[in-house]
Image (cartoon, rainbow, N blue to C red; front, side, top):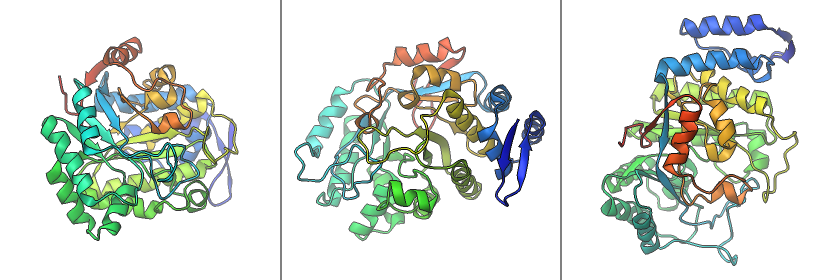
Length: 370
């Protein structure tokens, strides 16, 4: 049994019967409430919550688990924001600051071999011309026309729009014409303003992140949504974040995947005020997300963030996407992630099969590539 303090300050007992009521609502297609989501984030009935989440996953995707073969392209680590939560960013005069030239990018794509997708994010560099970004996309598509480009976070789009005085609608059209396929979910962090002020004080607000994504959706561009958790947020902040995602999805139908991200604090300026999350904490987070976000098709657990064994467990807790190979990933490993910097396709297939599921190789739009 757990005690839950709801938003109005009343105390509520969480029992197995609460999960039974949630299961009945899910079966009837009724969205769960914020208080019910908060209850699930605190419940000790791990098997119960996983059973509900897994039933949703099975209805949506059967026994299939998706994975991708891709590479990360972090084109620069120079960033004007220098967020406390980020271990990757540098000032432009730092000894280890870098910017990839278009030729560097072309070489990386050429050398990556049999990939279906490239995932592009970088810092907010003060000196790069607009042509750099368009040329990057066009060059990649010239080298490999079939590749799916997942590029630039909402933070980058807001920055480019303001810096070059290009309305977001026009910016998205230009990038689509240059080869953009979809948009990653980075920069969402946690929407709660008081938490965001501490972990990313110069980054765009949660409200602005949602506005940028809404404009992308309006232009026919599908996106991911992320949430950075296990730092200084409270359970109620997690529910608030999920609610904003669900509300926008009701309007635009533009989110294809929700991706919770576990915070890695090493080499950052943020020291978590809570203990290291347990396996149960992580399971509750993913299962709650699957149950609450009834209108988002996919829940992704990045094996690189949570580790391969935990990722396998999460496949029983509502997760249908284990992530991708992520060759040359730099951001999370700058913050101390202990997982390998990339995984092979056989490695991912084995993880999925060993957990009892059928692997399916797809690109970021969940189109099979084999």
